[in-house]
Amino acid sequence: MSGHSKWKTIKHKKAAADAQRSRVFTKIIKEITVSARNGGGDPAHNPTLRSLLDKAKSENMPGDNVIRAIKKGTGELPGVHYESYSYEGYGPGGIAIIAEVLTDNKNRAVSEIRSTFTRKGGSLAENGAVSWMFDRCGVVHGTSATMKEDDILEALIDFDIKDISFEDDKWTITCEPSELEKVKAVLKARDFVIQEADLELVAKSHITVTPAQEEQAFTFLEALEDLDDVQNVYTNLG
Figure: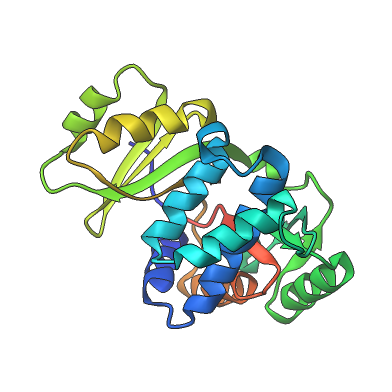
């Protein structure tokens, strides 16, 4: 099916090897807090929270951290009030970039993002400048010891599957956002280990750049990912 993104592959490898686990935990805690605030603290009635709990488990986050994050979101414990924002722009080689932010200080967040774009060879743009190049989709990452692409397609034949790709022994399955939870349930019932499942912005098409621009782009994207207020970075870099 459609092509894959080298940046996604590098991003997941980096996350898997990231020694600073506290940074990974902090980003998940923010998401859990906001999800509990918006949809309640009961995962049975909050599918977003349910997915985040799976994500926390896959990262081996201590249960106490999860419970505190939920209680801060529901108001049972005092906590920081995070707001979400999205920033768009261009990177080396003209690649499109969207950075999703959760922050308690918008001025700090936009200042750090603008500085990173400027220092790393990019340029911020108006909202809407590049978002039309992406679709929000349900994305499942996982592994299977026995399932092949035909097996996955057969298992998910009743759903609108947009893409299936396989790289570095990991499957990536893209579907309609509304079908993410059902797709997860079907895969969990099979010989499929879900490592991560979430709503993501997926580029409608990917572009290629020169090797030098690609290296510069990877450095740029990693710098954005490392900002404390940035939750997700998406690009159409192939």
